[in-house]
Every structure is written in structure tokens, then in C-alpha cells.
Image 1: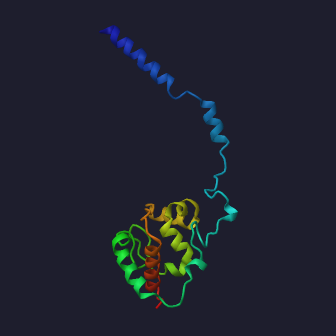
Image 2 (image 1 turned 180 degrees about the vertical axis):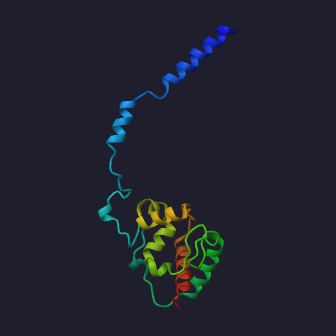
Image 3 (image 1 turned 45 degrees about the horizontal axis):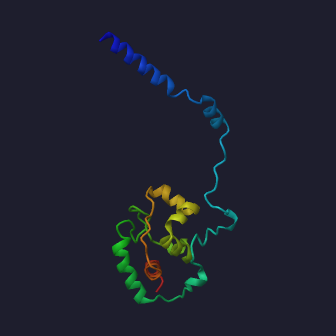
Length: 163
């Protein structure tokens, strides 16, 4: 029994001594020579924070001063199914930020690119990253069609006072 205890103690000591002292010099070098954080944007000079990352431009949206009521009704319906569990139409944060005045704070192309393409937007856009830090939950891709996204956007516009 005494032999087994001595053997087990030696094995435990060997295991602990082999862990942790591995590359202390490498760790110290890495700590002292920390690199500047790199931008998540591949080509930051080409990224437009007003438009975001995606296919939508203001020209493609072709916004008018008058809402398409059919789209608004559809957008409200889609919002109730896919968005309302995380977003309120007020400025109150639920899981995600409230939508009040979002169309006044962001361009139409940014909003459309974000709701149809959230992952690259969160990875690249400083505003989207700030929202993630505030909300602590990454917006899931809802796999919206272009029409569904546009309808939601029209509903957002109505919420912000466009008639």
C-alpha cells in the first residue's frame, strides 16, 4: 500500500511539473509585444458606415415621401412574428434596441443591409458593434426575403412619422 502511495505521489508531481512551465519565455514575449488590435473590416477605407455591408444603396431603395400602405401592413405582420420578441416600437430596449426614430438615426440602406445581412454588419460596423456591447445579444439572421425586409422598413418609417 505504501508503494502505491509513493508511486501515485511521484506520478502526480510529474504531471503537475510538466504542466504550466512549458514556454514561460514565449508567454512573456507575447505579453510584452502585444499587437495593436486589427480592424475587422478587410479594407476599412472602402467601408461606408452610412450604407453598411450589403447590396442596398439609397438609389436601390428609391424612397418616396409617401408610404406604400400594403407594405406597411405586411411589415407590421412580419414584425409581430419575427421581430417583436426582441424589439419594441418605442425607444425602450427589450433584448435588442427599440425602433423609435431608427429611420432618423440610420440611413435606409444601413437598416436594410443590417436586417438582411446582420453577421457581416456586426463584424464590420462600429455602430452595430456598439449595439452588441449594449444589448449583449447578437441579432440572428432571420433569412428575410428582400420584400419582407422592405416591408419591415416601411413599417419602421411609419412608426417614425412618415405618412
